[in-house]
Length: 119
Image 1 (cartoon, helix red, strand yellow):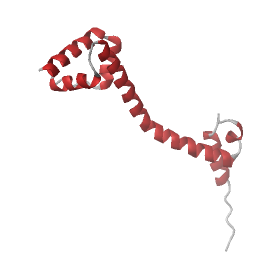
Image 2 (image 1 turned 90 degrees about the vertical axis):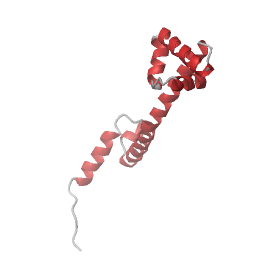
Image 3 (image 1 turned 180 degrees about the horizontal axis):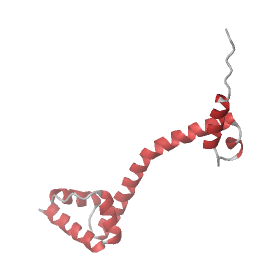
Image 4 (image 1 turned 135 degrees about the horizontal axis):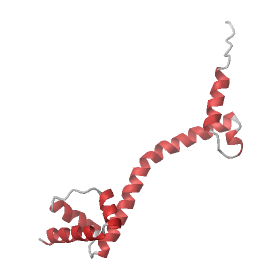
């Protein structure tokens, strides 16, 4: 079998991985084997956390809405139930923004929800 000379393929691959590992601590940014493992691990975490970010933000919005509802004498679940009965479709992100920036409008929404739940 004849010998295969790889030329600069391996060198280019190593350079590419080390470029991705730039800024990592210690030998993780200098040694190929350590850098390769660190980059693979970082990419796994990034992939997982891109999905987790969506869950985290929804949880944050719900907590904010709940806090604002409690200030208006209502629980989060009753508030959401009242909005659905009133056919008001506003997503949780916007409800959270309203609770922070436009408290008067949010108070009006809680009043509408209270009316629908009481009926």
